[in-house]
Image (cartoon, rainbow, N blue to C red; front, side):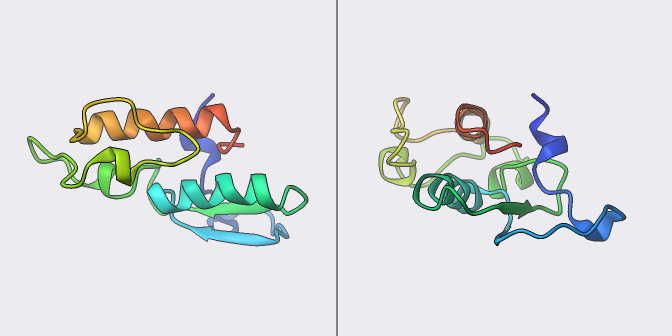
Length: 110
């Protein structure tokens, strides 16, 4: 599945206008978490994640400097519906992999 092509193509990019119940601004940790919770708690509601970048990840995709990592433990920072199982302090690459798994496992990219 090509998540990048499915997450965040706004109508302003020349596509057709589409009605959705909820707009989520950004495909970072909070945006992806919001999409998951909407699916679980409001299954009849439609949503669209608007993301200005070509992919998900927010901060973890934006910052590319060597050694970028979390400064908080991921046991606290991760999603309660998919507990973090790696080392408590993680690299951006590991966090993006985790977020990609959440997107894939829950059909959020669609």
